Image (cartoon, rainbow, N blue to C red; front, side, top):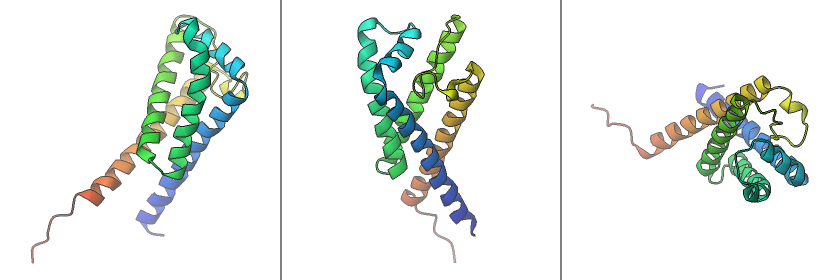
Length: 155
């Protein structure tokens, strides 16, 4: 197997894993919007009037981003959306911890085993952010090679 083919396979697998995680998380939140709204409220960041709107809209955005990443259709847009979501999730979670709030991440629905401890949540989200950043970098490198022709070789 050539190195390029191996890189393509790893890139495809990364897309599949990252997109599937976001699709799965979105579907769990869509199935129980009240519990997700309660998770959002526990962070004490947003005004009460915005919580229900976010609880209904955020999972749809996550679902769309996950589908874009998995399918490759508008891949960069989906990946940027996931990077932005993860950055906001990490910042909100760290701020809640620094303020001494006991929050359920809410990432995979109410009381999920994925959200076992703050350390697990931070490591998991950090790894997902790193994976998304690497995928974005790899994608940009591939686009740049396709757009910028190689320099002519002298004979």
